[in-house]
Image (cartoon, rainbow, N blue to C red; front, side, top):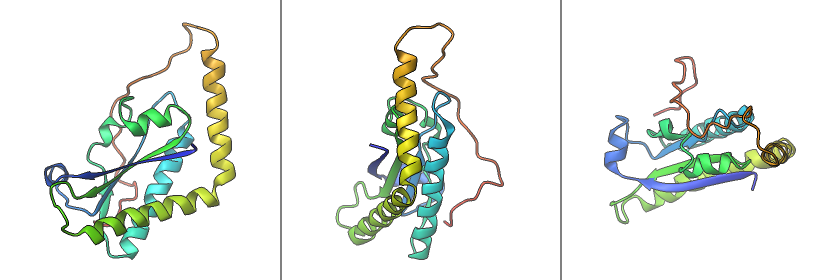
Length: 168
């Protein structure tokens, strides 16, 4: 697929590490071996989702575990390394039972609606990007070369203060 969304619910203890209790936490994959346009598209999709959630009275922020975005064992990194824009969508809910179930479902729905609209509006670019990345991966992997490096893990990236932040 050109876009993969890994959806989960987080616990209160996970949310408390960021100092913010939000309805939604979002992240995208990031790896130095992958075309930066994957991460750019993921960030654009998240920023649109932040706005859509705020317009509907919901709170959101970046996922507190964004520092593991390049860890190939996480779904968002795994799929991105295989040529997909990859996103993590976390809503509050573990150990809350039926509390706020409507709010949790609406939060997931609004994010998915944003992502689907983005995919529709950018389908040609996203399909070409995925196709190029998969062809490059196959071409580069066809023969061994010690000159080619493929970073499986990278350091944490800190966003600059000027980076647009969602409403919380």
